[in-house]
Every structure is written in C-alpha cells, then in structure tokens.
Image: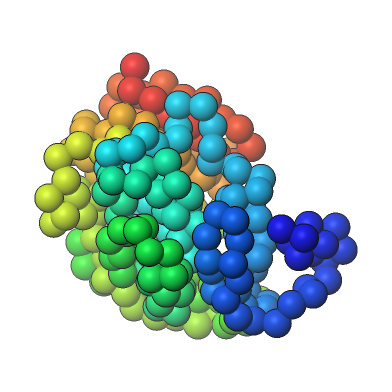
Length: 237
C-alpha cells in the first residue's frame, strides 16, 4: 500500500520487479508495465466495487478482458465458493494472469486465453511493443481510441460470449465485466443468449459513440444502467 501511494503521488517507482504480498493477495509486479497502478485502482480505489455489483458467495462471474487478474481475484474475496471465468487475449499478459491466480490458493479461477468479439475465428491483436501488458483488437473501433507509440501485431483465438458460456457449461451469469479497450460493442453483439441469462454487467466504455451503442444493446436486452466515469453499471429491470 505504501509503495502504491508513493507511486500515485510522485510517479516514481520505488521497487524492482517481483512478487508483492498485499493484505488482499499476492501479485507479480513488473516495472514499466502498469501492474502497480492496476492493482491500486482495483483494490485501493475499488473502481468496480459499486453497491449491488459486488458478487456474493456462490455466484458465477465472467471477467472479459481480465488483464493480470485483479478484478477476478477481487471477486474471489466475497465469492469463495462460486465460479469465476477470466478471459484475456494478450499472449504475455495471460501468463501473468495464470501466475497471479496460482499465487492465491483458493482463488479457483478458470483462465481462457482468447479475445471475445461478435464472431468465431482468429482476431488480430495490436500489442504495445513498449512492454506494456495492454492490447487492442484491430477494427474500425480504433478511431475512438489512442494508438500505441510502438506496435506489434499478433493473431489470437476469437470467441463470442455465447460460445464462451456454452463451452464452460454456464447456465446463469450473476456478474459479467467487459473491459476490452474499445471492442465492447462487438463483444456485446456476440452475446445475445448470454445477456438473456445475465443479472448484472459492468462495461468499461471508451467514447461517447461506443457508450451510446452499448446503452442501446443493453436496454434492448432489458437492462437499466448508470454510468460512473468510464464504467457503465447495468442491471436487469
């Protein structure tokens, strides 16, 4: 906590890479990749911990765009016996996600290495070549997001929300989180059946046009929502 607060106030990184132990869990932290900032946003700022959007014990939760596992492992703190599925396409980040899950015994998280979109089949990812753990899915939506200063392109398996829950044998989703760096509309388009069996959804939105289209899709499937910053919190009406 002290290192994170110092980092937030000064921007200086008073650490070298390694495994850090916090009161909320253990995580691999590397310099120059935003790990400490991400951990702080989720566990200290608690961006996703809004009333009615904190899972209960026994819930089934799906984290699309799981990154290094912070949200999935935060969910496990209140959902020790439920099922958590974490989906991450970045080929290096998904390995950190797996390692962080292994560092936290009892956090039984199913990791799926894939990108979620509107169709099945390979998707092209644009990776940040400056060793950041972030990735963007190629497509027209990128006009709404900033580009990486240096890029690498990499093909990954592409799935839909509907094929994900079918493959995992899920019949009901208590909480779904989507953070896919501008690809959220395509993700929702591939989940008509899943949206019909989902209670609550958190979507990170990256522009006004994408926010408008996400709202249209969600209201069309019977959800009401409110927006806090870049996060859309939707509940079934």
